[in-house]
Length: 281
Image 1: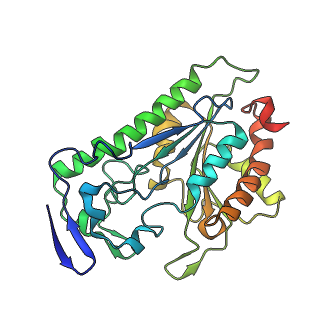
Image 2 (image 1 turned 30 degrees about the vertical axis):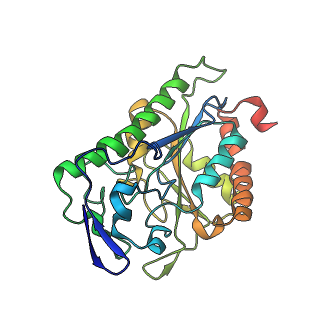
């Protein structure tokens, strides 16, 4: 199944049978499923988990701990925010290096052969059946979980507002990319729907937080796939929130930024009638 190509690196190919073993993690986690808020948080890059069958994709452990494998810190931030808002959340439970759930099936970076200058041996020359298996076992189940969570929110009795539930996609970004030190604390990525992005950016700025408007990436390109797939066809208010990783790479940083995000988000979401009374009193 594999051959050692240099010390410390193993080149693996996906087996013909199921990639995930019976004792390994499912492709997604639904958290705080019965949360009362009319908001769904999603975390596309929550985990760096790679099944045993893929042998670490041939990468060293130090590479699998880097931002290329996952969005550092954002899973804990999202869980804290889900509890603060009393909102349900859906998390991926696999590394973006296996397959990126925030990219469409025809994106050339869906299964990356190189990430931030690091070659991914286990993705080199991947066969069409192996590619399809990753979609079937990881990408598709995660998006079905998001669909199901949204369906549950849409089936709830309407509150005093006629606004549909909101979808908020949570990510984190590396402080330096290609030698450029990114100056933002938070990035707000969005496309055409202004209902959440504009008031959120204003709320953050009022609190002295350095906010990037479609920085360090743009919500108008491939980075907005999850929102385009689930929110836009339904007309749901939506936004992608990026937090700089060096701010949330410790438990203390996570706790601080859950509070910061909550203080900025609660008045905006409550003003739109999306929060249960207990979440903002």
